[in-house]
Length: 285
Image (tube, rainbow, N blue to C red; front, side, top):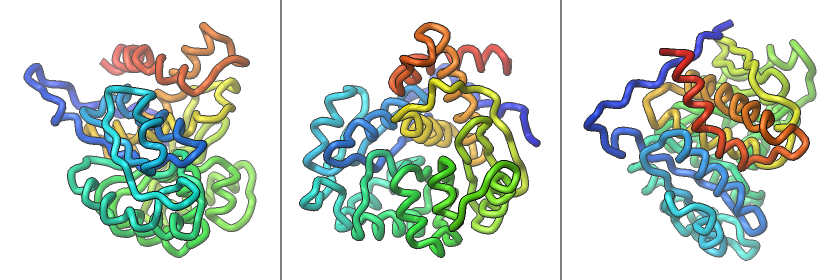
């Protein structure tokens, strides 16, 4: 087990926003624009210097309305308000300027979108986080998992993980399967749930922060944006995932102290990330 928290590089006094990377979030669809917005806001609170949210054109104004501090990129959309497969070239162009990417929050599903996700997974060389329907797209073409184009973090909950590996597992068997998937595909697996497991196949870390109040929609979107932001700041995929899971759970614990667990919502975690970072900094300095 690897339980010592990684440390973010210290910020120089003369630092500028370019020193802390550009996070590109790819997601959103009609009816799920908020998921992409949550990931974008989490990437900002997670310390990325710049954040861009690439969403289907019919949803981009809604995404922009959540937060003025990130930029938005309108992508070609299909008739149902999802990102069209024709958006690949545009995403790839913006990826060249990004430090790290995230794909999946609010994405939705279609055959064209599944194909787009697989192409991003295999062809983009920058570090990427995949969550939500991006995982379901990869599960539909499971052979693609073993062909990542660069550093990859996948963040499945137990149901999504069962689809990735093709069958349902429990307890230690599920953790062992996550480690096997990670080493076989050369990726980092974040198996979400009570005591989230982070593994690259060789190393395993069990997270101890978080609470049952976090079992509500949007929490995974926040984690996705946070991990992308930490990769933007120089952490490798494994350490970014470990620290992201820790801070995500800690923000949830701090929020629950004030609001209780029953009323906790995903945006509360974004509000409490600054306090979580302060606590983390005090513990590691």
